[in-house]
Image 1 (cartoon, rainbow over the protein chains, first blue to last red):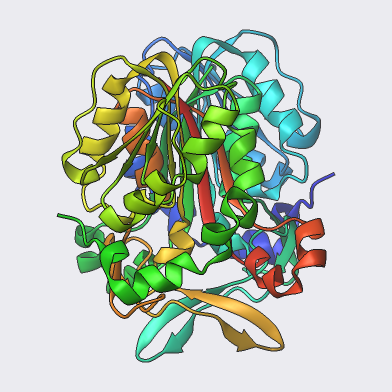
Image 2 (cartoon, rainbow over the protein chains, first blue to last red; image 1 turned 180 degrees about the vertical axis):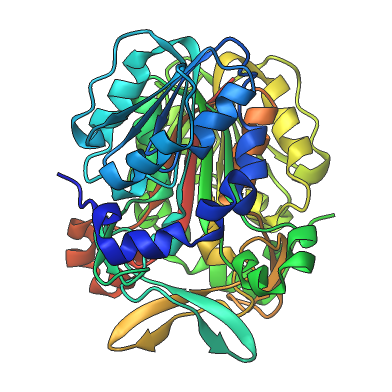
Length: 241
Length: 241
């Protein structure tokens, strides 16, 4: 089973204090780009893999989705998600995404934000997503960018007055351990090609790929984000069954 | 017009001495991966954009192509390519790829090896390629990998006994000047997302993306290539009209 760091008490406390936890989607700077990749949600059936506190599930309902299934491995997060809505068209379910079992040809959109880089085996999940979508259904997700996850020692260095991000082990896929909100958080590094080819091999058509970094307007508001343009923190992908 | 560094005498002398110039495709370590992306060439009409000494054009004919058009900006390279064949089904043409004009719906394969990163404007070329292909025709190409072209100071550093490749300016697309075989060689950095989205926007379906690095067998034969697995030197793409 995937490491469930979200049920580690100190990680959960740290995560709960992040802008994206407190403010929801508006606190996630990549949200406008991810939102632009979404289909019209009116009347659609939606799944959110790694739904956390349920911000996207509630957004999808407000945008007109007929029903939303939020799945997460963390009971802590689901408990809080359930507290935040009484909408009967949002259903939360605890499950490990590595053994996910979704009904066939049922959903119009499968969404996942910053979750898939925790999974050790991605092809099985992508196959599940593919069979769970209706024809023409969409799979829209974000993950930490492979340039971000590759290095054996992730972090910025200063060189000649510039911030640089030293890359090594890019082709060496597998676990990387970082200290982020807690010690020993394990994420899986895979290359950009692996993400894209696994989608293509399962029969998805790629619609759009985005290497997200903050816009000039966002940097004007948050000058501390400027270095994120030196290397992209997130990879966003939109695909069609 | 794109910088034509291949007609610079000292660059040309250096390039002519590279294994890929002397031995042809067998001297290009990424060739087996690129070859695996090619369709069956028997009876097909093929264009090679940036054909250089014509190694691929001659390969395509040996693999059964009905006709091959090799295009290059460098008269030096074309002169040598013409010396190496008397096959009337191979035609060489001098042209700047930034103003390319190909006949409509004519080719089964457009191929390009390590050339497109010299072009300042890629969308116009991709549109030309798209219209020049028959339906279901393929576009297979390699370029320097964006992780390779991004940095303001391209090169390896040593850190804790490991080779690392410091990345900066990844999101800042445009010219990068390096000293490679000659001083002041200008290549255009663009992100992985830009390469892929420009293909998608012109109507191509992506078939496969490869971030090439040497295999274990290749490293056993050439231990000096080992560092190339720390960050991929080349991006290989296969797309279908």
